Image 1 (tube, rainbow, N blue to C red):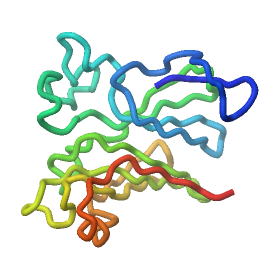
Image 2: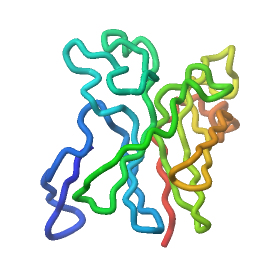
Image 3: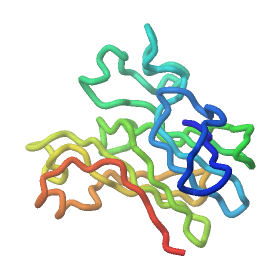
Image 4: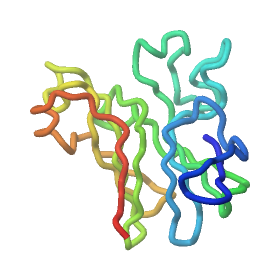
Length: 187
């Protein structure tokens, strides 16, 4: 996850100013809290989990379990975390908010690919990716990747994860793999 800047305009060009969290941290979703705190929700611990000889559980608080050599044989099982700071220039702190496979009713949910939004009352809603068992065990999620909703009273949590597919009817009709949601709030 990097901090890139464009001195002149939103469409760029951009230049990388710094790496905030190294590989394998990814799927960043940035929002700003009411108090001005910059929040970057992401998955992956950012400690080179996929580097030579390393395991996904590197600095994952003993929550991650898949060996890098087998990571394409099953879901990534890293934490969902928030980088937070009062400035884009840091310093950045980290808060682990979830480990998908520990969500009740979602025994193999791994990476959550978080898409958060702060509501007017300061509460959080977050669309997250579930990786439920494939049919016939799970008819609600025909391609084994669906979108569910999490909620928290503040960005610091605690987060309550509901593993139910938000788009069950659409997913059944389209039979698609759904991933990487984003919230957009009209000004």
